[in-house]
Image 1 (cartoon, rainbow, N blue to C red):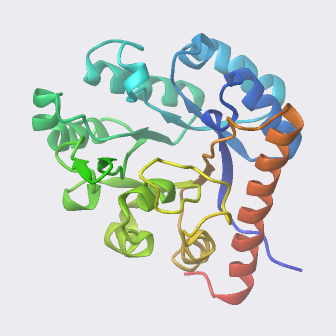
Image 2: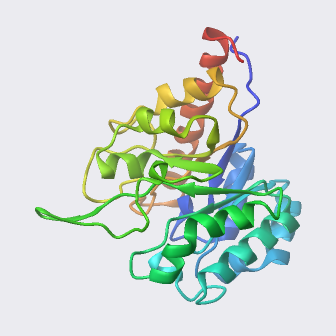
Length: 271
């Protein structure tokens, strides 16, 4: 029998979109996820710490991470000031007992924020035990044109951050080697968004195992290197024709992740 690992597997609330944050807690509990990562977005419940605490308590599902509202559609959520967004994300994580705040690099048009971002993230990281894990992104592409939409860089390993989030779907879209990126992150890899991709210009977020990304190999590497963060299933289920189909996709993603983490625990010694 495969040995268990210490790595906890969370469900991103974004994985149930267009269903609600509350639905994500319900599904996570029913399928046996170890927790959730709350994507703070336009759903009012995702922005309400007390509502999130009640959902967590009711379903017995802890909040393991908070994804700050840094998407295009969340430009006005919690503030138009990006630093205020991060302060509120940190406060939410502290109050909910989450260990990590996930943050994207700034958009290039956020010039002042981008200019101060690396130093500012260090300042915020020094003020809390919560990890600020900066996530790799990708160039935007249209036909044969490429636009660098993020600053100081979509490849976060080109800058000095205390912790990183690696997202394998983003690596696929960037057409970069995810395992090489994980090597560059080294022991600063603090958080994982597990999803697959096939190198499309669109950020696909496929169920792990349905694309070309080294999802299984990365999971094995996490066990081998004594990874102490969380693995978060962040997949796109918008095309699911029913709640049952969505839930089946999320169950498949969880089974894939557990299987490869557990198999790695048997095959390779943990540090």
